[in-house]
Image (cartoon, rainbow, N blue to C red; front, top):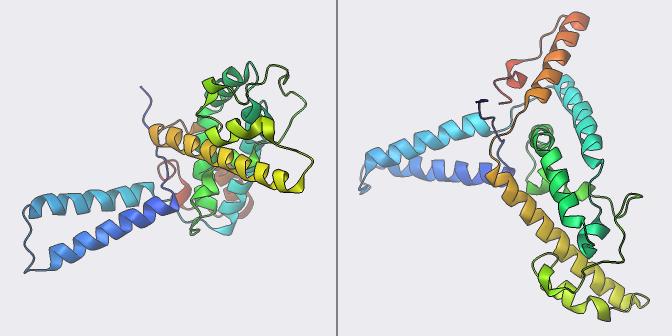
Amino acid sequence: MAKAQTRYLRPGEVRSLEEEVSNLDAMLSDRGAQIDDRGGALRRRNALRSQLDTETPPDTTPSQKDVLVKREKEIREAMLVGMPSREEMRRMPDGAVSKHQAWEKRNKNRKSMWQNIMLTVHKGTDDDSVASFEKYRPMRTPGDLGMSSRRVGSNAMHSFPSDQYQDNYDEIDWRADRNLEDAGDLLDNSDQAIDRAGEFVDDVMRANDLAELRKSISEAREEEKESSGTNVPEQLSADALG
């Protein structure tokens, strides 16, 4: 069985763990504090510190970041092939669900690699959505499924998109500016639902194969060594990247 790979923490997760460690440190250092299970609190503090050391994205040099930026673009372009469009996800014609599931399965490993790269390249940001691929979903594509069998408004699809969007879809006057703005707000709600669904999958999928990413970085290290005699630091080694 392949070794489970590391999923890097989002900025919000890092902040939450660091805050808990700080609180535990303060409690454990207070000799007058009444702690029912000091040993348990100490073990919890140590476990959190270990998690932060292991799952916080590593620091990178400019040259290392260049390697990752190039790799991110390659993975992103590969993932966009066959990705269901926003129009398909909104209207949900026949075949849209199976198309989405096939895309998710095909890109499971790529998605994990892409997210770790984005969290590494943008380390220091407070934006948790930096590792969300949803912003790259195309509005429409030439390969979109036919919309004659669209399910917008169907009670069977009540959870995705939102109920509010589906209940009001047939009543929207697309020619009126006011209603167009309302439709945009409803579409934003649908996008947020997609993000939440993707983040849920990410939380469940804690470990995926990053072999392709490690190979790319390893090759970059060798190229850099040959061209400049400078090694890529261990922060971007196979172990550091999980």
